[in-house]
Amino acid sequence: MSLNDPKWGNRGGDNRGGGDGNQGPPDLEELWRDFNRRLSGMFGRDSGRGNGSGGGDGGNRTPDFNMRQFGGGIGLIAAFAVVVWLASGFYIVDASQRGIVLQFGRFQEATEPGLRWRLPYPIQTHELVNLTGVRTVEIGYRGSERNKVLKEALMLTDDENIVNIQFAVQYILKDPQQYLFSNRNSDDSVIQAAETAVREIVGKSKMDFVLYEGREQVAANAQKLTQDILDRYSTGIQVSKVTMQNAQPPEQVQAAFDDAVKAGQDRERQKNEGQAYANDVIPRARGAASRLIEEADAYKGRVVAQAEGDASRFKQIYTEYAKAPEVTRQRMYIDTMQQIFSNTSKVMVDARGSGNLLYLPLDKLIQQTAAPASVPASEPVQASRPMSSPVAESNVAPPRADALLGESRTREAARNRDRGER
Image 1 (tube, rainbow, N blue to C red):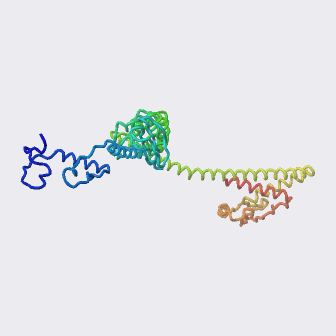
Image 2: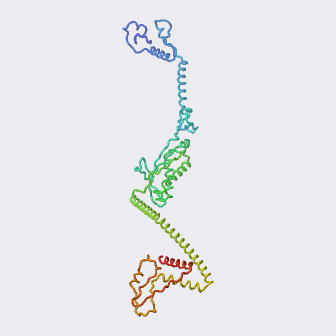
Image 3: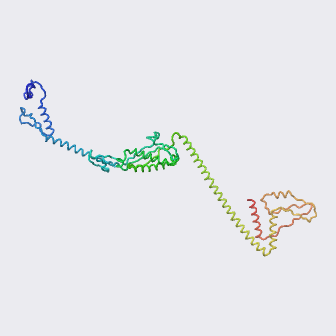
């Protein structure tokens, strides 16, 4: 059966002349020719090339299908795909990063900053690790100090007290290879290591030391111990700082601890006040003691010098006494009586008078005794003569003694007065 069979209608060249033929299904040869023309256009062939004649079926001749031409187009596509695949191996490493190249999932090399190339996927892959970025983890709280995590915050001290400690740990990466291949989650590793370190330090310390006195020291020791733990596990992490956010007793006993803190503050205030008073009194007491010591030394020096002078004068008097004992003895007696009578009131009575009745002016004698000390005591007091009998005042003034002996006696009297005043 031909495609030009009248049963299907005339689909040949006669169909172009008139329009009275019956319409049928599409011509498969025409479809095949259209497909060849399109394919030839894709590979650069002239789809309008025929046999040179304008009529008949010469213009619709079916082209031959060339597998060599079809294979050339596939090669271009494959070459382009290879170029794109190789170009996918380029990557850029920033100055703050390090590149880790993996070959079939295993570490191959670490690359420095710059434009780098590796074998494309799936042979090699790369990961970029930031080494300068500071990362922070929170222990005992999350986000805010009010959002407590009691499982991490409550710790036991050496004196069997429970404290609530909240702190933060800041860290950076120092070894990208260890960071990627030696731990699974860096934040969890730091949290567990820091919590372990703080619990060990708090467990060896007293409660007052952790809460008030040694918070900075606890943070410093925790940083060192945390770093030792992380290095032991080769995590490639460098702890930069541990900050104590809050350290307080549990809420159930917070009021009692506040009272204890106030009592401690009052104790410190009273100690400071006592210390201030001691600083005021002790220097003054020491100054007074020093002054008394100096006065005592001066008095000792004066007494010793005076004693040495008296001893020297005594030696001189003894020398004179050895030369004339009687005269010296008489002179000493006279000087002694002079000193005695010069300090007392005297009443001279002539016993040889004929009168038997004596009159003594006692009122004047009492007034002279009570007279002020400004009156020279060396002036003799003369009593009134009695009216009934003549009273003659005898001259009892001794002759002038030796000047050296008189000066000695005068100084001895002055010294006696000074001792009486003391």
